[in-house]
Image (cartoon, rainbow, N blue to C red; front, side):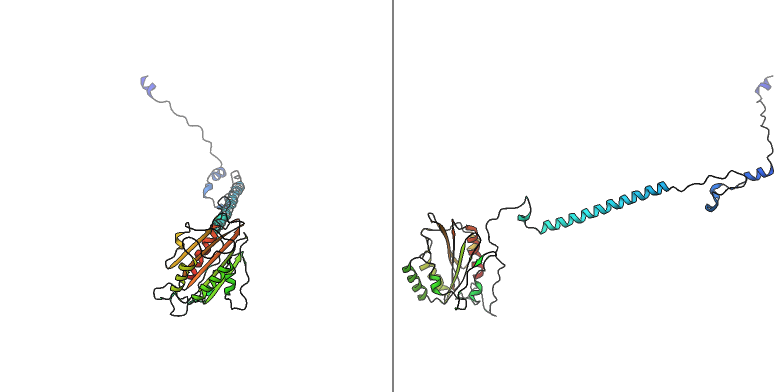
Length: 315
């Protein structure tokens, strides 16, 4: 009894009904994954035809949309880069005063053209070089006159004198008739050779005249300047309308070049309708006289700029 209870109950397999021969054959088919792609979806005899697997057009369309979007954004980014680079280049080429928000007020300097000294004859030293004891300007003095700034109206040049300014035209700027005769005699006594010059009026109404007086040697010009024309107080021969002068002690130190004796003056109040600024300096064998006048007052910056540039040309 015990033995029977410990034995497992016999297993009775379900009755097997032999399948027809053609049915058995229908089960012996090649797995679908091993069927060539060309026939993978064809009907196999003895079984239901496999459903056709449609291509995934939605996924392809989605991939194409993503690709097109990526290309569009890449093109947009490239355009922005090009525009940004062009803008940056344009900004880098602009002057600070051209940039909105970054513009700085002009300090009043004039727009002079690039200065070029005329060539010296071969072997000729400059007027301030150590070997040139006479301080001779071997270049044409007429080519050493400062050019007018851009926008200025240039006065007609002297006629019939090969570009040289006649002494009477130079003396016409001075006020007193007696002073003119006295100055003319001093110039003659010191051996004045030529006067070169130029004059112009800028749009703000400032009238500028430059006169370059050439003598035999630097010693002569230096003696005439410091002994008869100028000193630390005031010029000996004031021009028309000027009465009270003061030495411009605020003149930039950099403008006082070695070998150049400079006296810059400013007419002090009361100076009437017009103010005068005037500078005398000697460089080698030449004395320069620069005069600026303007109704209401002459700006200091263009005056100093003009004197400094003319000094550089003569040095």
